[in-house]
Amino acid sequence: MDPAVAVLEFSSIARGIEAGDAMVKRAPLDVMRAGTVHPGKYLVLVGGLTADVEEALAAGREVGAGALDAVVYLPDVHPDVVASMGGARRDGGGEALGIIETLTVASAIDAADAGVKAARVVLRELRLADDLGGKGYVLFGGDVAEVEAAVDHGVARIAGTGSEVAHAVIARLHGEMRENLATDPRFAERIAGAEKPDGGPPPAPVDGPPAGGRPMPGTGARAQPATPPVAKKVPAKPARRRTAPKRPSSRGRSRRQEGS
Image (cartoon, rainbow, N blue to C red):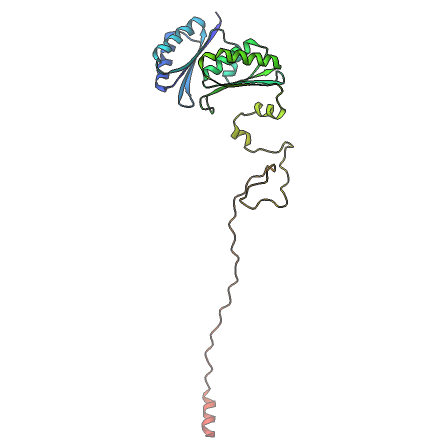
């Protein structure tokens, strides 16, 4: 029998844990992974022989009824999909790029499997749930015609679920966009410590921004915190010494008395 994979997406964490427990008890499985994803959902993934995965899937449906948002069952899952679910990322495949964006993890996995089976494409990446508000997306790389075929088959596979957000085909992906996709796709990580393409920050303009101001566009400089003005030190005036008025001496007084 071919290896099979099933993924169940629950809106309730409690129901998801309960269903996962029932699934692993129902049939012997080669793999069982479960955990929370954004935004507060619970995923259960099981893999193994087709008959065993079908038994476990039936148990999950029974116990998790009412909280089951989405499910995908792939009786002959493509090995590249399994690798991508584990975090594998690939480059190359041609100039074109295909994207399918979905509302659920299950639909993204389903679309990826359909696309990579239907056309000669590279499954570049499969992003699921976390940091995406629960959504998922898949990227295909290859020649334009092959990428178009992969996207068409992926969209057709999930058409009945109503979970497609958008899809697109870019005939010739720009080099800078390719570089961005090949690194961490999260925007915050992309702009942290960003530098100019030549590898070094450009010289600051002569009339640069004041402290605490916004840097000039394209300089790569960061805003500097405002520096409070330093009060000038005024030298203290020396204290004036107060002198007592001179008193006439007793000798002077006696002379004045003799002359009178």
